Length: 200
Image 1 (cartoon, rainbow, N blue to C red):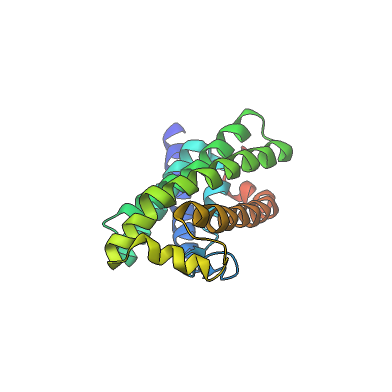
Image 2: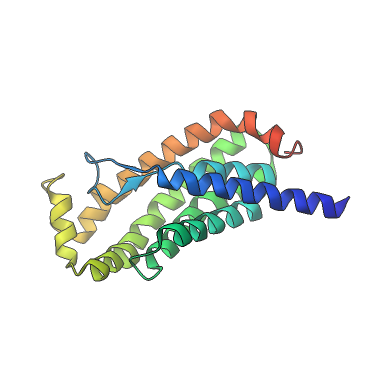
């Protein structure tokens, strides 16, 4: 019985990872917020669903498998730095949300978890972008950091430093993502979770 439960858990994690990877491919920019190389996707929705229905460990596993699948299909231009950053930012969102929801499985707790996780993720992503992603993309494309700052300044004319780019582009971009992903997860979870486990 325990073996069957473990196999089912693994199958469900694999299925949610595949859905998450597919959603990663359906990305789109928010040109009024951030430069076009920042693209929004909804791949965190199945990750959050998994973290809530199957536990925080499942959320981490789904996030990791999603990134690895995308890396295998699309490759990398940043020697894996971009993918590592994507994983870390995703975990910063999903893990706190999953841990908080695990304590008391109610809609209110889920919303609190996504709020806390989303806040952690939005702040953490600023540091990841400033010290990992933007330098990695710059090195991969042979561009100076100032080039990205200029791209941001075309959207928000007052930007003239990396710090201001992160504050006025990266932070709002990720807050919008958190709001949209959280709203979609809240709507879909009650329909999907019974199919997944029936023990949430």
